[in-house]
Image 1 (cartoon, rainbow, N blue to C red):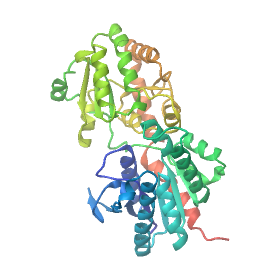
Image 2 (cartoon, rainbow, N blue to C red):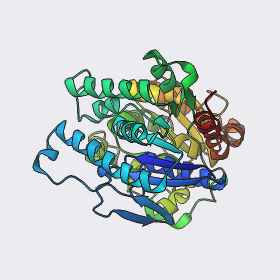
Image 3 (cartoon, one colour):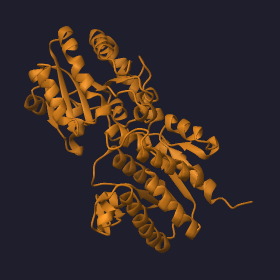
Image 4 (tube, rainbow, N blue to C red):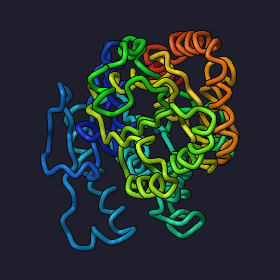
Length: 403
């Protein structure tokens, strides 16, 4: 039986696209008969050494309580050294065949140090370049010292690990551009559990009435409210869309750093009860919210993060047979074929967004075909079973006897 030790930034019970992908990978690897172990870095914030979450066992790395560990750069060093110590303890006891480190680079460096000590091959999975994510979240400046150091650390790790996986072609191309041979990089794309995300149930009338969207044509977004998601652009497009279709309603489900800003903008645009902020929804009830929405909107803004990285949420919407309208950033173009599985509009252009939505509303006859083709794409190309199977070749190459 193959035994893989996954090294993670964070995990359940925290909620993020990162944790959802992790659980999907682990679940499918278990179904393939592999033995998986799971360790999170100190960024999980857990004081426990081990934790059971929904039937999954996670090893934790305790946070460093020394005063200097809260300082910039030194804090990152403390995370990496603490993770290295904890990883060595677990790897010596469990003797995994592969160390599989997931973004960010701090996890890969810890895995490299332990892998070299114990002669265990290391796979590094790039889910995003975290220097770009930090810049887009506003926690560091693009091109600044921290950005350059993080990028250099990432490249250092990529050149030294035994194999590399990543989630999309945009990231693969960037990795290769850093001088990494293409043969060392395998794309294991984001996917969905098509069995779990079946066609959304009939609209929940009680929920629809509670939210004030019953009997309306509903546009919607379900996810985190980060600036790069472009929700402010969506709000600015609403007056133009309402002029063409006064019965429209916008339902925003989720929360995040932009929440208060978006509420203020909605008031400034005099959108009144045309925009409903539903707050965060329990994960088990997400399908009920999808069932209320006619058209899911993903207006991501054009920047390095969104050009390179493919999101999960549009795939979930397509799996449930929802209509999808998205900006034409690179991450969306990898997932959506314009006019076949969804609709793309010029990124950053509120007029273009309003025009595509209005055109879709005027052509309801094409809705069943779009929905059917989107669902077929998920079933044939974007199932976790198909996606996770790609790890088998990666692991087996590392474990094959050296000639």
